[in-house]
Image 1 (cartoon, rainbow, N blue to C red):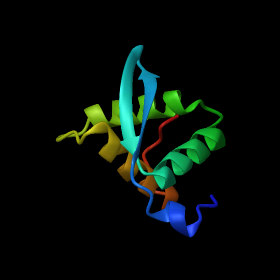
Image 2 (image 1 turned 90 degrees about the vertical axis):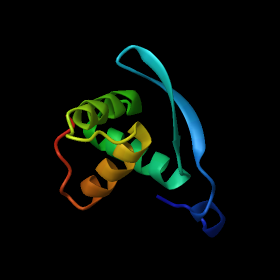
Image 3 (image 1 turned 180 degrees about the horizontal axis):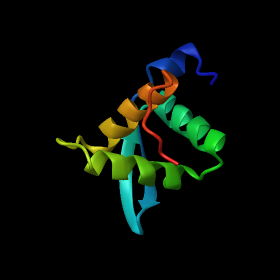
Image 4 (image 1 turned 30 degrees about the horizontal axis):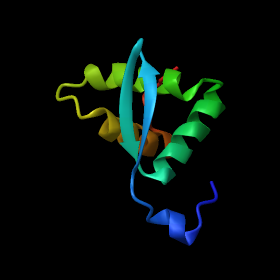
Length: 87
């Protein structure tokens, strides 16, 4: 991940993806988009598939957060080696 100083504080970027057959938009900071891409590649999955798996975990939570929040939290847990399996 090579985000320059100007990119580190770049505002969130909205992207459209398809999960579970439905089109949705997700707004994440570039750092999180890059982390999501890296995590998906590490698992041999398209980003859409990884997001769909994170979404299933999110929906099963006692108090489900929004999808973008769930992705950020999952990525931090993954970075720390503590993420629930999303494979």
